[in-house]
Length: 383
DNA sequence: AACCGCTTTCGTG
DNA sequence: TTACGCACGAAAGCGGTT
Image (cartoon, rainbow, N blue to C red; front, side, top):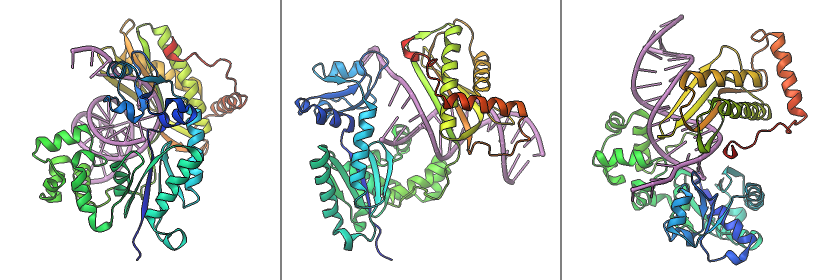
């Protein structure tokens, strides 16, 4: 069988690049996409800002301190989606685009050489078109598996192109090191280091079953494959355990029950609306609380039937809140989610729900259809 | 023993 | 030494049922 070829495409500092493209006077400057103020974090920043050690997920306050002359811009998500679509449209001229986030996609380019030319030339052509027609740069990784391609796109950022030939897969894994392998985050890296593993080669010296004993069945076998440059990702599993959730961190901690319930009411509406839009029904409702000391807890409860309407979500939310919270205790973050969702509006035929409940859901759906947004709550963070 | 519900932890963008 | 968002999926560990 012919050799597989995968591209992974990653738009460089995407949000910042769009802002610079829309306002070229920002070019060459440290652009930081973030809300300013406490309890806000950096979404993305230009490479000029990264020179000041600013990076995404960093508290805005810290970014300001590291880069006092940085240009802070609030994210414009609509605009980024628009540009993202334009880029993906270009990519789709070369193959089937598998978009995985607003700024990332991979393409199975196996067997397209006769049509488009050598992978490297195709990648260069894609990059040129995106630069000329959109005005931003991107990085492309090319490899025999999506797993390696993903890490290859990271290798030369920004404006990078990295092709890993299959015979060099192991060499590539060794070159990037444990800390840059997908799926190994901060805590797994520490666990590895604590047991004396500092390089992928160290991991290769140990048989899989030993890794499984040390790191658990899932992580152990993942590490074994990854360090041997074998794609550890599972593409077969259909996606289960769908969930829909929302959470908000208050500008100032909230210790008043009336306010919390008001926020939960808004969230109940939001979750219900999203569940209708996605045509899913949930069996489990979960509440998340973060206290002022950052200690975070969750509570959830499942029902025999399904979550059918806004009231049901709200009532359960309030009930869960009363289990874990007493009036007066300051709350930093509150979140609400629907879990165990099933696709389809009525996955199980009736009998499970009463006629009345069905009518209520229908009513709620109708209300949603009319898009009664007038009652939409203020954003929690403005409270 | 297999499964389920609940909670926490981890990793990703 | 301050600071530390949001949304999602996966997995592990625990206790309880069938």
